[in-house]
Length: 71
Image 1 (cartoon, rainbow, N blue to C red):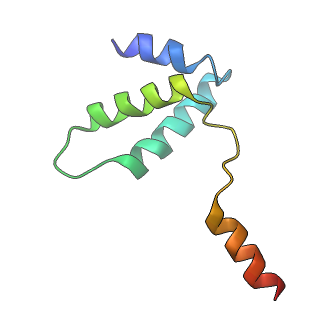
Image 2 (image 1 turned 120 degrees about the vertical axis):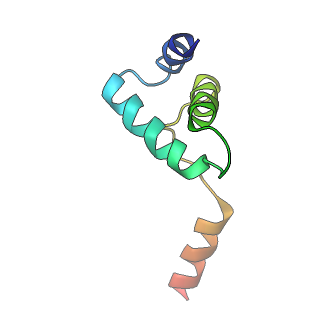
């Protein structure tokens, strides 16, 4: 059930409004054509259960961009 997914995602995000905002943004980015929007939303909530969506993500591309700016 989706309510179980929501309560699991609230373990990482304490504010329900913030959870709603993050889930809607992630759903828009991860949605694939010809799939149900409900399935994509459920997948996003499952991802939020296992990891903190508010944690900063360090990527190699951002380090590369910073190196180019410094030159």
